[in-house]
Image (cartoon, rainbow, N blue to C red; front, top):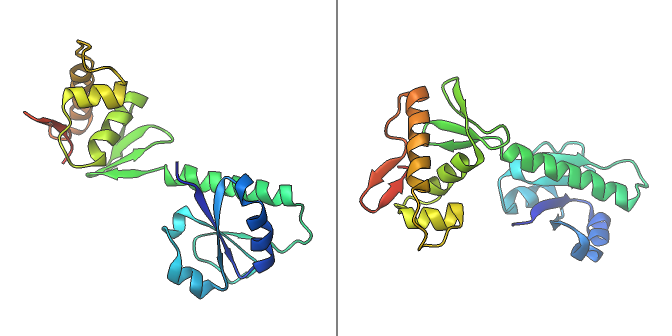
Length: 188
């Protein structure tokens, strides 16, 4: 799993303190001398990053202002971890797949105000088929979704795909969400 990023902007002393204990942190720290340097060099989208600064004019992204000094280090790290958890939760809230929204937190799959509840396995199937635009055969899905060995005789994949397709077709009248090909299943 990739570490989340804490951007420290115009707060050198805080960066130095956290840099000394970085092996014990569950986030990556990046130091910027000012807002312009941050905006120019930021690694990921602003919605997935946390910025910590003293600059009250900073409005880009998720910002944690620290202006009450002194603050105990454990309290600061707790605040940062809470903010990073909120960012991660919100970033998982909606994934766009074709014309649909998949909310990983609530497990709802929706389009134009209509939604259905998906199971964990159905979500895994959709995410796996959507992750790269190749066709996935039954053996590939057995191995990567169900962790089955290739010599196991089962119709689990076909049954789940059939039920998921039916669920989507019944609710959204979409027979073409998961497509079949002689080489396997895929989402276009």
